[in-house]
Length: 309
Image (cartoon, rainbow, N blue to C red):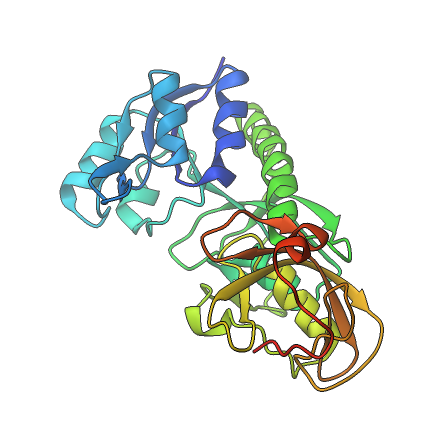
């Protein structure tokens, strides 16, 4: 026996879960994802989401509604005859009629230890806040934002130099396994749900453009967490004094020395912060490929005393 599943997801993070569900023999009767976005040099080509690409590879029916808040959307949801919905970083709110369309409910994979970091950017926010650990959770969905009871969870430590990209990939794989285990328990009737505790609620708001610039006046640990929490995208950036070109810092570590915040201290891209310093290990000039610091310095002369702003 296998479950009839409606899968809802959009970005790369959701792909391992879809592949794992298909691989375990469940019947995916419909895939919901965000509509293709304009791409190409002139924005004339439409780029499908990573989930749409995978769904079409398996010849699964794909739906890209702009909203689920219509009678038509609710009717369509019921018409699939699915047992359950699996939601992974879909990007649209599921209103009550959609949640009620599936007899066994809708289950969401969320990349945090709820109730900490409810919302859109839990991986980025956990690193930016300097959290020592995070995880993935399978949650039965309610109308509230990530408020539903927890079915299963896995904790992972956040390594000192791990970027959001590193953590994203690890949690995507771990989450895929967690979701299929939860679906197996659901199928057997052994899945238990635990309400989220009322204490410890925080929100992982979307990353705003105005918070991506590196603030060198902050202590080195905060600068380090900010940079790795935004790497590789959208990227924490700075400008080299006099150039006016944005450079993204992608990987850093603790540096030695001190000085005026934003001042380069040596020939290895160690930069002074408000307290201590960070050493940039990997960076990317606007319009160029990401490169290691020593490769970057071969093409760009940055002497000690250079200011970053």
